[in-house]
Length: 625
Image (tube, rainbow, N blue to C red):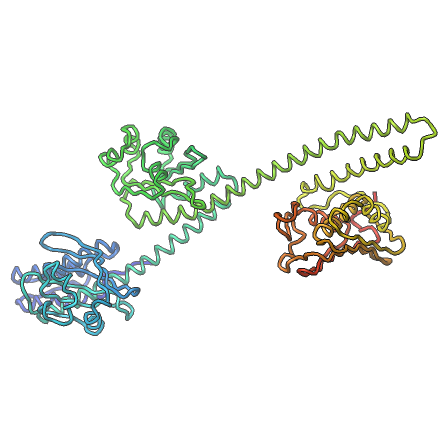
C-alpha cells in the first residue's frame, strides 16, 4: 500500500503561514509545479514563524517516534511554551498515559506518566467536550485542580490542551504547558494548537495504517516460516531452515544454539552474504560450545531471558565481557546491532536464536518480533523432536519384536525337531497317555509359533492384515478347547463360566488367530466380571457364525466405547486392572482380517457383551491355504 503524501493539516499550515505573511506586508507564492513555497519581503521574525509552520507541514511521517518528537519541538517553538507533550487515551482503566513529552530548555524527553480519570473527573469531562481547553491559572481553575500533584511537580502554571481524535474517537491529548508565570492564551495560540492537533491526528492514522500493514506482513512471515520448518521432518534440516528463513527479515545473520542435556551446540548459522558464512560458522564453532562462555547468546540461555544490544560497537562488546578475538569476528562481519531470544518447550529452555544487523539498530519492537518468531519456532521444533523420538521408539520396538520373534522361534524349532525325532524313535506299541502327551506338545509348539506371528509380530504390520492360514474348522469345538485350556481362570477370578452352543458351526478361518480372539474376550470377561457369572455362546446360520461373550461386571463408560478397540486403549485404570490395552485391539484386527465384525454393548455397573460375527465362507481376498 502506498503511503500518503503531505498530511491533511498541511493546507491549514499553509493558510496560517500565508496569513502571517500578509499581516507583515509580504506574500506567499506557490509555484504550480512544486511544493516549494517562497516568501517575499517580510520581517525576519515573521519569516522564522512561517518557516517553522512549513517545516511542520512537510514533516515526514514514516517513523512515528521521530515524527512525534519533531511535532513537540515545533509546538514549543510555535506556541512559545517550555513544555509540550502527547498523551494517549487508555480505556481500561480510563486514563491518559504520556507517550512523549518535550522540555525545550533542557532538550529533555519524558514518557510514562499516568493520569487516571477516577482521580480527575472534571478534567476528563471537559477534554471530551471542548475543542480547546485553555487554562490561565492551573491552581485556581476547577478543571485542572485535581491535577495539582503533577502540575506542581513540573511547575506548570498555565496550559493549553487540545483533544486529538481519529475516526470520531478520542485517542489522546496534545498539551502545551507554560512554566514561567501565568499566561492568557490568544485566539492565534488556540488556532495553532488546533492545527497541530490535526496534523498529529493524521500522523496517528498513518501510524495505525503502517502498524496494520507491518503486523500483517509479520504474521504472514511467521506463518510461512513455521510451515517451512514444520515441513522439514528431519531435525537437522529444520534447524537449517530456522536460520535461513530468518534472514534478511530479522537480520543479516542468524545463529541457532540448541541445548543437549548439560551441553550446548551450534546447530545452524546463516548469513545474507555467502562470503561471510564461513567466517560466521568459524566464530560459532569457537565460542558456542560451552554454556559458561561469554557472549549475548549464551548469556540469554543462562538467564532464560531475551537480550538486546542496540549499538554493538567494540566498547559495548568489551563491557559485555566478549573476548577480543570474538569482537574481531563481529567487527569483520560489520555487526551494528544484535539480539538473542531463548527457545522454550514446556517451560524448559531448548535453545537460543541470535540475530544481528549490519545496517540498522534494533529496538524493542524488533525484539518483540524476534520473540514471536522464537515462540512459534520453539513449538514447531519441539513437535519435530517429539516426532523423531516417537519414530526412534517405534524403530526400537520393531527391532525388539523382530529379535523377540527370532529368539522365540529358535527354541520352538528345536522343540519341534525333538518331537519329530521322538516320534520316529519310539518303539511300538506306544502307550496312549504317552502318545497323547507327545501330540499335545507338538500341537502347542505349533500354536506358539503361530502366536508369535499373530501377537508378537502383529505390531510390525502397522494396521495391515495379519498373516492368516485359512482352513475349515468348527467354531464350537474351537471355543470348547479354549475354555478347557483356560479351566483355572474362572476359579482364579471367582466367576462361574457358562457355555452353550448349537450344532457344529463351520467357518473358514485361521485356527490360532481365532483362538487368540476367544481367549482375549474370555479373559477380559473374567477379569472385569466382578465375581458374577460369565456366559459364552456360539450360534449361526448358513451365512454367519456369531460368538457372544457376556459378563455382568463393572461395564465400560459410554465415552470410552468408541475407542475400546484402539491400540493401548483401556476402559479401566491400570492401577486396579493389569494389561497393556492390546488384547481387544489384536482381537479386532484378527476379526477384521477374517472379513468379520466385532462390537460391544455395555453399561456402567451392568456388564458388557462382546459379539463377534464371522462369515461362514472364505472372504474373496483370503483364499484358503
